Length: 128
Image 1 (tube, rainbow, N blue to C red):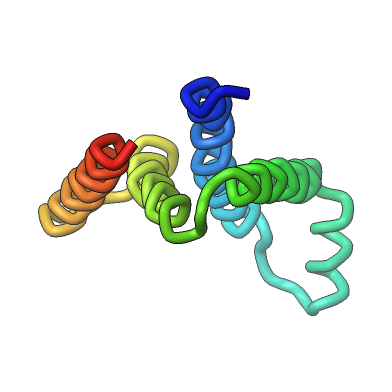
Image 2 (cartoon, rainbow, N blue to C red):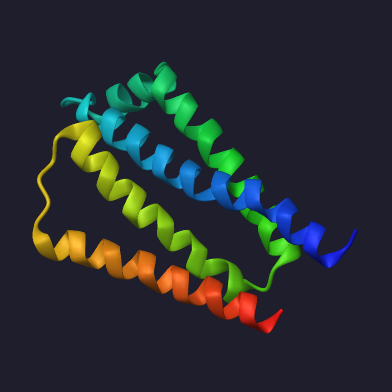
């Protein structure tokens, strides 16, 4: 496989992994909102019978497999900054999925995260 083709093979994985992290957080929040009160056994039984819980587990496994495939092809120092995209996705999920309010500092921080990822990606392209 040529180096340029190998880089393109990473794109679906680099999209899948942060989307799985964001989906996991959405499912965890939805699951947490629906738990209610009860003892540990009641909560465990609720989780064991919840389709949301098993979907959350499946999403986590898919995200882990994508992450392992990424790490198989990239150095950790190059791969890890890309996971920060999930922070921005989770903030958007909070706003649009759960109608949470965010302040200007949170929005500014998200923009800085995206700018940092852009700078890192640009630097990597310059090295190639």
